[in-house]
Length: 186
Image 1 (cartoon, rainbow, N blue to C red):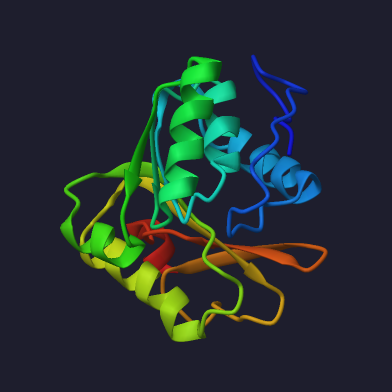
Image 2 (image 1 turned 45 degrees about the horizontal axis):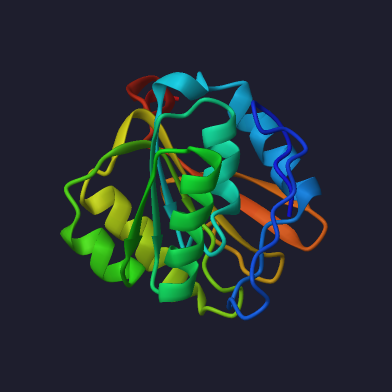
């Protein structure tokens, strides 16, 4: 795993082999951050990274200047790795060991970008539960986006908040946003 851009560009990180993770590929991650880069100033946003695993996405945001990042994962060893790597790289990532669904129900946090990378073998309903909870709890700031990574075999496009998908090999990023009044009038 490597950091694609920012102050830690090209930095390689080696996660322990015993972590139950599937990190986002470098190709998909680079494409995702090219999209995000055209919509946000990294140094002025808040990010919540759900099912953060190794922290791969969180480190990328931090390397690009994001100051407020929350990483959430249920696995103790993943959180331990994120905390030790954040300390080593001098990044201010706040890691929570929690079941993501319980975290979403209880958190008062809001963010500009919420990124979720659940296990690909989840039922579609489990993916959509994340989307429903984020919007029901009004967790996105104005002009915020929820990005859910999933396999090409999962279709989330039927949700009313779905904006578009971007596909990279077997990976798909589904983007969900609140519709603006202008969009709803069309």
